[in-house]
Image (cartoon, rainbow, N blue to C red; front, top):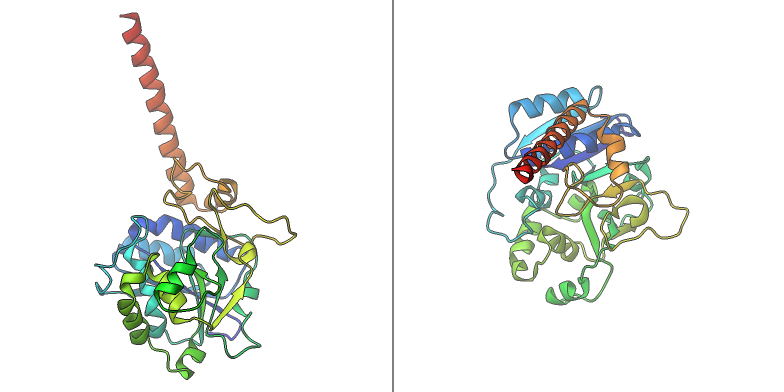
Length: 288
């Protein structure tokens, strides 16, 4: 790989395949020379083939994960077990740096600045953005015996693997920490990562690089351009019943995916026809 390429780590199953496609499309709108490392436990051969076709001149490497180590960890119902894989998968990839991304995101600008933001300070091992949601991070840190500090959202993390190796950071040590603090973890592996990398995080602007699309979050009145929209909600924007904010931003990139566009319009048409039929039946019953 060239030095100016960006390595992207995605971890998802078939349920999130469609969201992953749209994230990939949005990334390619603003960046060239991407290498996608896609970790999965149950993607079909057809889905893998379709993604390889989607990335075009970029690269896609698939990594099959046979690991049920986190099956018994509690997590919100809309969080798949694949989200735990980011604790250890970075170690399996032979690159100096890689950016992990949740697939419920779309990119709306160039994010190279985030990827390279740690270049001037060797003390940082990872780069992330402070969580702007209503997270009780104070109690999280107290539970792990740490002082109050900024708390990052793990939806997008740049792992500086070369520095982590120099500091003797191993996937085993992170997993052992997660098991040790299991009783104190409230938000899946996010709490474990915050505790483990405490004091070693290069914090960047969340209103640019990890804007959480939630009903209780409003964009600050700044000139900052939102470059990463993170739909961290139980209902995702590719669902017909999604009623959350910034759906127009999502659809802007979703409609670039023919597979999504065809499926969405077919389901929409079927649902519309079903509603019409229900109304006709209801009217006939009233007349009777």
